[in-house]
Length: 252
Image (cartoon, rainbow, N blue to C red; front, side, top):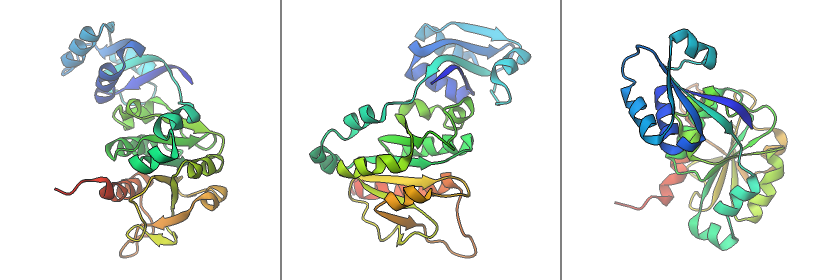
C-alpha cells in the first residue's frame, strides 16, 4: 500500500475521477493552464474539491513526473489479495473451462513506464487480472499509473512473494501457464490459445526467473525476421495477448 499517491497527467486524472471519485482527496490544477476546464467540471460533478496551484506548486507534489497541469491526490492504492482475486476470476474448475479467462503474470518488470504500458495493453486485451512478485518489480507508482493512462484502476493487480509459488495453484484451477521467451520451445502460432491461459513475461533484459520458467507448462516465442533478437516487453505483450485473444473473438 502507498500513502499519498499522486496521480499525474490529464488522462489519468480524468480516468480516476470517472472511475473512483470517492477515493480522491482533491484535484490540483495548474493556475492559468489551458484545456483543464473539462477536468474541473468532472471533479465538480463528482464532488471532488479542486485547488489551483502555480506550476512550482504542482512540481512539489509530482516530483520529476510530467503532469500536464493536472494531479489527483489519492490516499491509498492497494494491491489486491491474490486469493480473493482468483475467487472472483476462477471460482471453480468448471467456470474456468467455460469462461476461459486470461491472466498476466509479470516477472520483474522494473521500469514503471513498461509496467504502465503492460497494464494498459492487458486491459485492452481483456485480461482478467495481473499478478506480480514482491521483489524486482516496479511499484504501483505515479509514473506507472500515468503510463497506463489510468488503466491501472480498471484491472486487479495482486502481489505475491514469488511467481513460481502461484503457478501450481493456477494450474489446479484449470489455467495453462505459458512463459514468453526468445528461446521458447513453441511458436506463438503453434500454441493452443483456445483455453484458459496465464501468460508470464519476464523483466527487461533478464527475462524469466529460472524457477518461474521451470514452473510454466511451456515457453513460447514470437518468430522474428532479420537480426532482431527480442522486442520491448510491452510490445511483446501486445503481440502475445492479442494473438491469445483471437480464439475468443467471434467471427464476423
